[in-house]
Image 1 (cartoon, rainbow, N blue to C red):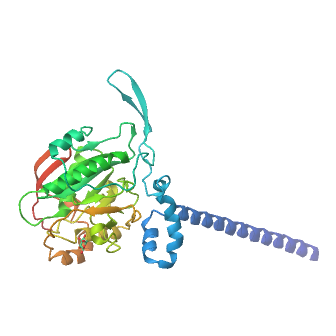
Image 2: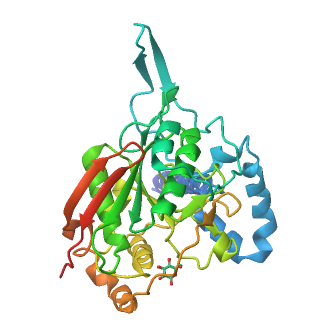
Image 3: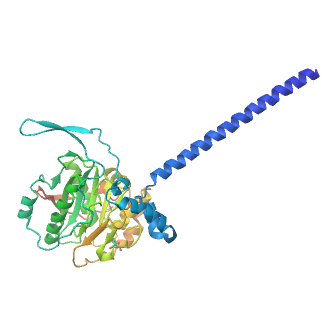
Length: 376
Ligand code: BGC
């Protein structure tokens, strides 16, 4: 009887020990999994991401270490590999190109870092050639202000959307600059000038929605860069590519002493993928007159758990062309405060407009549009 008891007790304690060992192994596995997740998160948080940059701008004590990180990728040879460039989604990595003389060659996908960048570039604001002269200078463009590199397959198909009215001189300066700046970046791009017809209050955001809609009708663009006509990039390492997270590009503007006016700003020049744009239902159509529409977009991004990324301020630099200040919209705060309630019904899905003209010119696609006042 005693022998049986002790044998049983020995058996129990062995089962107990095995159970303990099993639990210990399970805990070890969970711990290992947790550690590897931490590493993935760390890898994802590259120095080019905005959270890091915001923290760079806000936290003086951490500046030095982050500055070291950033300085590494400001050297032209290594800088761009660290920026938030969307991984290539296209399945094609080579393409056959046929030449007039019957020969052909295989094209490869363009390198992640465009090889012929200059870094800081000169911004010319006087003696801008006429449109006709520019059409000759930029004869490599296809109609609609379209460009594709011919030595490789572009990684990004980008529609540059510019809201416009009454600024012919700015437009020439912009086109002159952009068509010499962008081809070096080896992106497949098109410029869409969306002009508001009539003399009523200007609606920048609605013009951007129209530009997005028309651009997508014309080509399979992956992303949009919403661009004020009076802002000219000063450094070609500021890549006009499709962002992983919405990217505010005009970080440092001369008129703002090359400093970001506030953290959530999303105006001037900003990039979003088509998918991100759809997620937030585009821009609100309710902002007539100057101001607020970009802040409303910034709120939409936050609401949909997207965040604003930025390149470093010494790369994302812009020169602003001189112009008179537009009349501010007195209703902008009202619409800003009620934005969260309107996001699903006011935007890309409720957009209505009358295209007056859509003309693919050599330097840009001109969209002249009549914007109706929409009610919700
Ligand atoms: C306006 C924005 C504008 C920003 C910078 C803000 O007060 O609401 O629309 O982009 O100022 O000028």
